[in-house]
Amino acid sequence: MSSAMTKTSLGAYESRTTSEPEHLTEAEQMELKSELTKLEEEIVTLRQVLAAKEKRCGELKRRLGCTALVGLKQNLSKSWHDIQVSNTYMKQKTSAALSTVGSAICRRLGDVKKSATFRSLEGLMGTIKKWTEFGFEKK
Image (tube, rainbow, N blue to C red; front, side, top):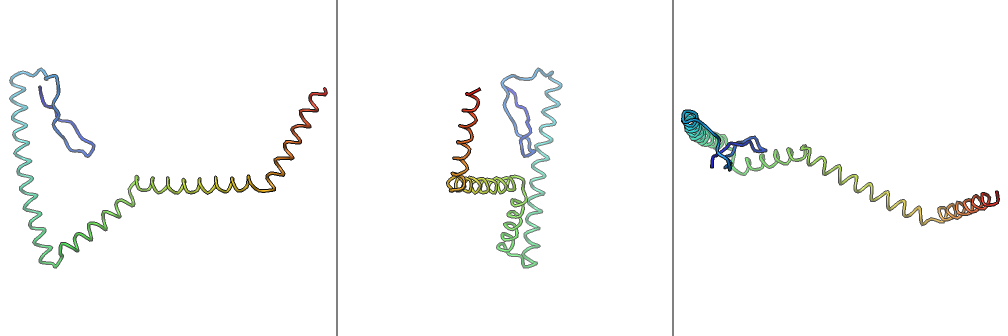
């Protein structure tokens, strides 16, 4: 079995085991293994750099008086704003609004159908239909 890198929906790459190994020469295998080793080393380095930068960021926030609670509040506010402007949220709001309008229209049409005016009109249409049918039968 061999491993293949596939791109995920978030843009990251993850390793997937494939059932059929690729037919590679020994030189190609060595080159890929070397590249993989370098990438793994770069990832470790980047994680270390990120950890150091996060630590420094925390120190600066502490010195500026930004507490964790304030930061959490800002993060939550930004996240809520991001959700509200996202396409999915807007589609859900639109869907809910259309559903409400649809329900209101159905309710209103039901009320109209129950009204005396509609029943009178319905009766008149029935009478006209009978006259028309009767008239066509006579010919």
